[in-house]
Image (cartoon, rainbow, N blue to C red; front, side, top):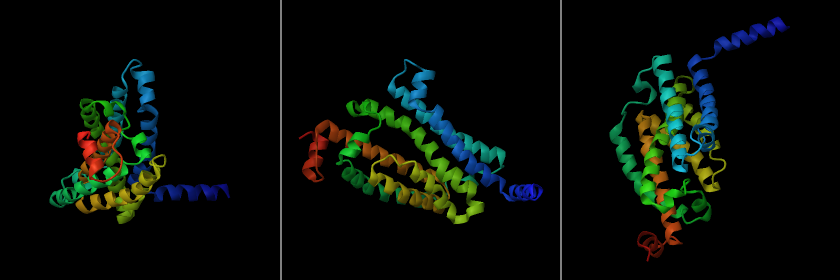
Length: 253
């Protein structure tokens, strides 16, 4: 019986698609490495004990850029001999992408303005509270944040999406959306729900445009707008959604 099970096990292993197996397994391993060694606590405890909190955030963003973008790209291009255009690194349908991004900007500005009125969001955003007190720090923080978005988006909308597309087809859109949503489990409830919908929509958009790059400015703009509104509300005490609240937030009156 053991011999029979061994043969079945070997046959099962041989039936696995190597690229899909590597991509899915490596996604989990890269997340573990990122959370273990990319955290601010690890940076301040082992890398630069007397470093600043902003430096710690920069470390976290950089590690995500390496683990989410650089390593996955090397795996697919060097390890599996994939062309950049095959794994979402080309420009794709950039005209459609620009049109959709332009249409998204007013939506995200209005949507994040509404969300920022909630206490749960003002407590959560910006993640680095120093960005609330100084616009210079705010700009530096979000400039560093861009490294994070490149790594974060490629891990799901590039590596997992295009790395498993030959196995799952269009269903790879939903495969990449599931872990993405689960990683938002500690966020405010409305954001958690939106993360699942957003993960599917972003995956579909990248699939249609054949380029992961469109996902980066969309997610970057979303976080930038939310942090901006929350910072203004915290600074000025602006409350509500109407024009009076907006005027108070923007001009302090």
